[in-house]
Image (cartoon, rainbow, N blue to C red; front, side, top):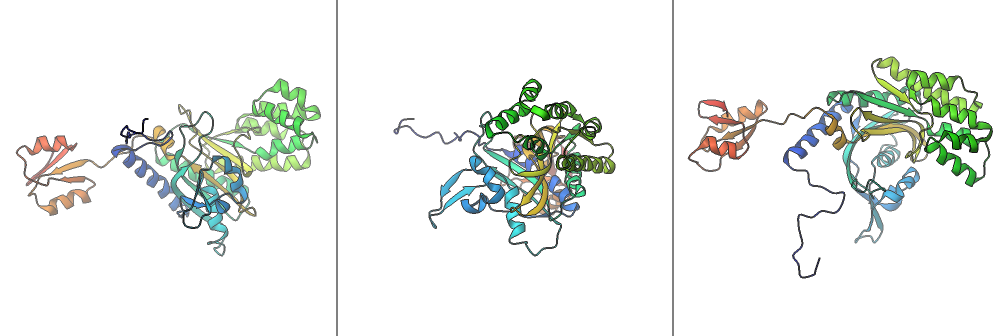
Length: 380
């Protein structure tokens, strides 16, 4: 653009969008429905800031988010600040500092926007919305199961059908590989082959662990069959502990919610930057994007925690349409008490600011499906 041209003020940077009336309202209503479910299970809402000092935001597990983080200089302190790309590590900071003396387990929920550097192929995702829960201070299969079950209830509340929860344990496959004692370059090649689910390359690179690793690749699928396959593998005692924990989490979830759809992928480890235990990814049929993800990690490097973060903008594409308030046009001069009664019944009233000749036409022009007359409420 030439310096002499007027700027196009409607133009936004890649990855940032305006949500207009119905979209913004639907997102807000959807988030509140989810947060109501979280609150009903004892998760108390907190609101961390959008921006923090870089040294705080990227402390501990936050280091894994460094490449996704926008940075800028604080003009007051002259220190580097960072926009949060994810809210989980902020919740961990709050738990370890301001809520350090609160009784455990600590149940917290949150919702808000995050800004991140777009990853290759996903440059359009630079401002995202998150809504999630964190269960801090206890390390057990029951805690891992709880966050999945609460999220499942929230998705059901939104009317999202055909939801599945894919469980994985990144540390399990890493443990099996580490036991081979490979040099870094060979280990990287093997992990790349596992990531691509390349059984032939795994057979070549996996050495003595190749049969086990390929069996783990083949095990991916419905939880019952996957866990049965894992149970039949010959694993070291350290790897067996991890496999048993994965089975315990899946068994607990299925026992509490027999109808839930669970799958297990023992070799999925991509994208789990700071997680240390069982992880979960949420999908829905006919939706290309994941609805959410989460898992077990160490809060502020020391305290056991698990959580799950949902993506509201993705949820609403999979959910039944959010019902917005029906709009009622209230012509100038109509009793304000009658308009208040309409609002109490769930309507949104649009007040006429001056008399008009055709109130019906004015109501339609303003997008109202109803008209409040002095003696009646009529549907247009």
